[in-house]
Amino acid sequence: MSFSVNIDKKGLFEVITLKDESVGTTAEIYSFGALLNAFTITTKNGRKNIIDGFASPADAKQNITKAFKSAKLSPFVCRLENGEYVYDDDKLKIQKFYLGNEAIHGLLYDASFAITDTGKNNKRSFVRLDFEYSNMNEGYPFHYLIEVKYELSTNNFLSIQTVVTNTGDTDMPLSDGWHPYFRLGETVNDLDVMFNTNTMLEFDNRLLPTGNFIEYKKFEQMKSFGQTSLDNCFLLKDSTSPSCILKDEKTGLELAIQPDASYRYLQVYTPPHRKSIAIENLSGAPDAFNNGIGIIIAKPGEQYCFSTSYQITTL
Image 1 (cartoon, helix red, strand yellow):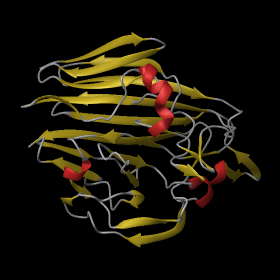
Image 2 (tube, one colour; image 1 turned 30 degrees about the vertical axis):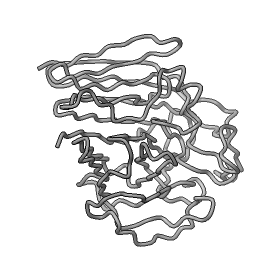
Image 3 (spheres, rainbow, N blue to C red; image 1 turned 90 degrees about the vertical axis):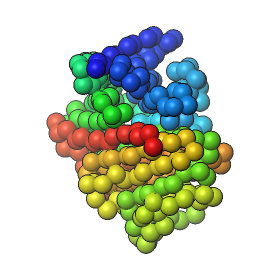
Image 4 (tube, rainbow, N blue to C red; image 1 turned 180 degrees about the vertical axis):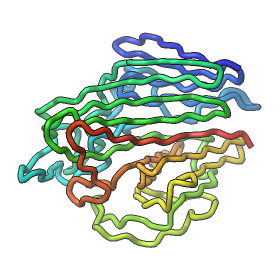
């Protein structure tokens, strides 16, 4: 049993491949956005990548804002009402991507991360990527270092840890998350799913939380997803069980997503094509800078850690 790390330069960006040499499982990570572009295992029907990714880093750079596939969400997640928030009596406005009237998905989805460490042994391989944020022109006048570590280990297990350090001299508002799309088979209609929640955040017609929480038990137990359409956020019960399990009997694949307590919220989105489903681990709710739901006030010099994992099982 052995693991490997391979780094290829593709244009302006690196493509990192972590591999379990004994079974052929691989994780492909781009330095562009520190995004996960592939998580591939060997099945009885051949190789299967469960991530709905990009053809290349150049493709990701050109098209990341079309669906934000695998995007790093930082320093805010999902939608921010009118792209505005008030912090320390200052009214601030985000100067980046908007969908309608709302700024969405943070500021780092297209950042160029630097590879700062790699390693391998007989049980795992890993890569760490860093980015220092200090753009005072984007409506977020703070400084922070973000470190993302991917580690592939035995049994098709991939962990992702994000560490944020406030490198400035003032407090700063913070949320963290990920935006991967998973594709186990031909369509999400074939999935059986379970969400570790019985509570949904109520949204208004702009998909912004109202502040109310409502009961939602539809997928508290494993159930066929069918024609269900979601663009909703859920409060997880706990961090002792997977936040989500996806199972496709046709392909014989099951995915368990297990965040730690830092990711208390689960956003689920089904795109119109229904070929994949976005399962987003979030530290706070959409528009947290305004509604305060799950917001973190990061102190100067302090570190904040967020972890989740994906494990593929063959049925």
